[in-house]
Every structure is written in C-alpha cells, then in structure tokens.
Image (cartoon, rainbow, N blue to C red; front, top):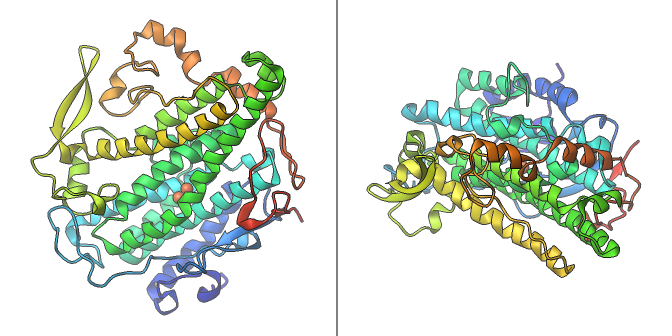
Amino acid sequence: MSTVNYSEKIPNNVNLGEDRTLQRALEGWQPNFVNWWDDVGPDGSTAYEVYLRTAVSVDPQGWAQFGHVKMRDYRWGIFLNPGDANREIHFGDHKGEKAWQDVPGEHRANLRRIIVTQGDTEPASVEQQRHLGLTAPSMYDLRNLYQINVEEGRHLWAMVYLLHKHFGRDGREEAEALLQRQSGDQDNPRILGAFNEKTPDWLAFFMFTYFTDRDGKFQLSALAESAFDPLARTTKFMLTEEAHHMFVGESGVSRVLQRTAQVMNELKTDDPQKVRAAGAIDLGTIQRYLNFHYSVTIDLFGADQSSNAAIFYSSGLKGRYEEGKRTDDHVLKGQTYKVLEVVNGQLVEKDVPMLNALNEVLRDDFIKDSVAGVQRWNKVLEKAGIPTRLTVPHKAFNRQIGALAGIKMSPDGRVVNEAEWAAKKNEWLPTPDDFAFVASLMGRVVDPGKFAGWIAPPVMGINRQPVDFEYVRFG
Ligand SMILES: [Fe+2]
Ligand SMILES: [Fe+2]
C-alpha cells in the first residue's frame, strides 16, 4: 500500500498529520474508496481532466480552487467549519449546556445511525448518476455532473471522518459498509428509497439535483444545529457545496423549459407530439417527472409521526431547519403541530405533539423551499408567453412512507379509488413511453460551446469562464 501524504493529498483542517489513529484508519479505507470510485463512479471518465473546484481550506479564498484535474486524483478533503470553544447547545433537554466535542455514551448508537444514514446517500447518488456522462447534452453540463460527483464523494469522506474519529471499531466497520451497499442492489441496497431509484436521463438528473439534493440541504441544516459539535461543523461546510448541486438542477430545468417554450412558439403549438417531433421535451412529460421526483423526495423525511424524531431533537442530536432563527422555547414540550391522517379513506388534519411531528416540520420547510423554485421555472414559461404552469403535487400524492401511504391521491389533492388511480396514473407519473422518448433525445454533445437540441445554453459559464470553455479535456 502506498503511503498517503496527508497535507497534500487530503487537504484538511482536522490535524490529520498529527493523528496517527485517524491516519491508520483512513489509510485502510482510502484504497477501497478509490476502488469503489473506479467500479461504480462516473463511467469511462478515468482519462478526463475536468475543470473542478476543490476545497483546500474553509476560508473564502480556499474553499473553491479551480483547475483541470483527473477525478481519480481529486483531493478529497476533510473540513470542519471553524469552531467556537464556548458554543452552547441551543435546543432540547440539554439546552444551555456546552456542546459536545466527543460522543456521549448514551447517544452513541443514535448518532452513529444518523451519520451512517446521511453518509449512505452520498455515494448512492454517484452510483445513480454513473452513466449520465455518456449522454451529456454539453461539455458545460458534463463538467457540472462531475463536480457534483466528486463533491458527493467528498461528503462521503466527511461522514467517514466522523465515523473513524469518534466511533472506533464500529465506525470503521460502518465506513466499509458505506462502500459495500449499492444503489438499487437487490441484496444490499442503499438505506433510503429515493437513493435506490434510477437516474436514467438528464431530465431526471436535473429533477434529482433540484429536489433530492435539496432534501440533503434540509437534512444537513438540521444536523448543522447538532449538540455534537464535529457533526455540526462538518455539515455546515458540506452545505456550502450543496448550493451548487441545487443550482445545477434549477438552472437545468429552466434551460429545458426555455428550449421547449421556444419550440412551442416557433411551431405555434401546445401539442405534445409536435413538440416531441421537433426534438424538445413536452411540458406534460416535464410535469410528470416533477411529480415523481417530488413525491419520492418528500418520502425521505420519514414518517409524519416518529418517536425517533422526538428523541433526536430532545437529546440535541438533530435540530430543526434554522433552529437559531426560531423564536419559540426550543424545547417544544406541550406544543402541537398539524399532520394529515387518513380516516375512512379521507384526509383529515390532526394536532399531534410537535416533538413527534418533527419529520413533518422539516418536510414542510422543504416543501416551501421547493415551491419557490418551481415558481421561478414558471417565470420562464410566463416570459415566453406560454400559459401552462408547473405545479408541485399534493403532499399525499404517490407517497410510500407514513400515514399517507395508505391512500391514493391525485396531484391536485383529491382522494381517488384504485380504478381512477389505475386509469390516470399515466397522466400523473412518467410512463415507459416518456422514458423512452427522453432517452431517445439523449446523445452525447461535448464539443465546447455546443448544446443538445432539447436544452438551451446557460447564461454564463463556470467561475467566469466562457460558456464554450474547454471544461473537460478528454485526453
Ligand atoms: Fe452531498
Ligand atoms: Fe449534493
């Protein structure tokens, strides 16, 4: 095994050079990580030099250094946001006590589970996206895909660091298991449902990075409040990278809409078949993709009522989104929250103890944030003079987890029977025909400055480079 030069190969601000135990653990893990990257990371990309940003420190000059690198040689770094030695726990039963620098014994199992669940999503998304490079609509988009892939790889490192540093032998075993589970695998799948779904094409990729990376934003934000200070500081830094992933999704869908609207205007038609025949993606297909990704993503927040969620909050492990900005008592005992419940086949609102409803609280925060971006997508249609609008489906639409899994709901919020569901499903969720059509548009366009016909070019390039910059050198 080759030795690793820690200050060079693994940029870090966690004193890796002086921590022999951590060095040994990472030294054992790193070759397996690289094997994992080779096996299930971006397909056929080994020789490419990609214009990537690399974090080499957490300060404003260091967190985004740009240059052409081979992804295999990407400097996966370990960074914690700067700490505050006097930081206090600001919610739950330990409110006002000092934040923890080590894992308290009584919270060890829960913290490990939280870190493993978050960590598992990071390599999962790389696996889900591994074939997309073969059908990139442009060199610019190819680069963005790879940027997201290496950063999800770095997020895995961030969680593995916590496991190695704070969880001893159990942590090392969990770190290995993170490389063994595989997205969509029959026998050893990733932990959460949405991370076992396929990301078969670039419309799915943009929807995934818009919605599912946004789930990441909300989960990381809740963990950034944690009483376990190393987790709070690690996730805060991960959030700085997550913003770009959501930008790729939001701008990607915007550009698809822009192109579709242009074709509709040129042909003076809203007939989906004519739009398709002209090589653009019809709005109905885009809406069905949206419905699918939105509904599987809101399932990620878990059951609407959960005693685990209450325990995680009260014990200080996981806060709410923007906990520090809220003006309540940050303990939440005796408070209630409205959740939806199915009674006699109908949805009714019900007040439940807020502590048990914290998954729902986080889901509702996510929904607000998601809707805002969908409204920005609608501006694209509005500007082009197209009357159709995209909408997010009802919260109970197509749910598999929690109380709402018990009913069938139309996107506009009507409870429907099995027969109506079966009859309308093809209008509400992507069909095999939709997937086949979108797949038929996916061809590799990678000459600098050239774009596939179903997507408009971006307004500007990456890091102030021109749109036709050579973002990927194929070697
Ligand atoms: Fe991530
Ligand atoms: Fe992400």
